[in-house]
Image (cartoon, rainbow, N blue to C red; front, side, top):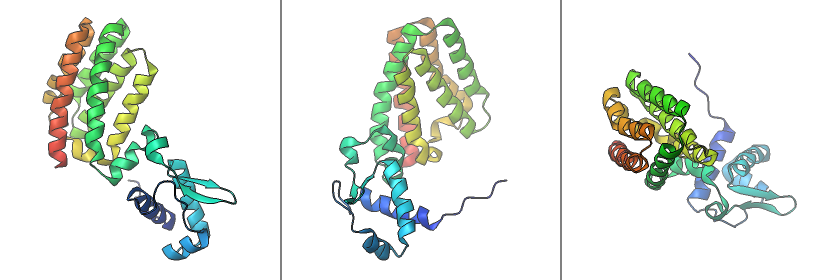
Length: 228
């Protein structure tokens, strides 16, 4: 067994600054107080503060200009989907908006996959679907289900759909344990997903879109019940 990671003072400060930014205590476009003042206010060294700043710059929440200061980035205007895991962790209400996008993108991906999948990709999808039924734990079922959706995205032949699929699944990560409702029964999970894979396998684009929409709405309902 691996030892659990311990929070460092940089971890704690990064989390505190991130919460203060996302809660609006440091508004978008505003400059943070001078480093010495901010370090004293949080009770840390300036070195610790610089390390935390570096992480938040990398996360897209801050931007630092030498000789000018550190400004809160307007992430709502300039940020990308890579911010979603952090935003969901901060406020679980974001997950409702993620699900709305999931429905639209997922149905479109299934339709495109039905039109474009090669014979090899159809075989890959069938094998991925069987792995859902063969999984032995809710966590394994959930991960196997994810791989079916990745295979669907690859079957579109469009790499942007693959990246969008990855982005949406990454957004779930902070609350994934609470979203296992649809995956507690491997047989039921398989039955819900099978019509999507069958329609893609037969090349029926309209049926694939309908099946994906039904699957996504059904699993969304179950997952939201788990969150509540």
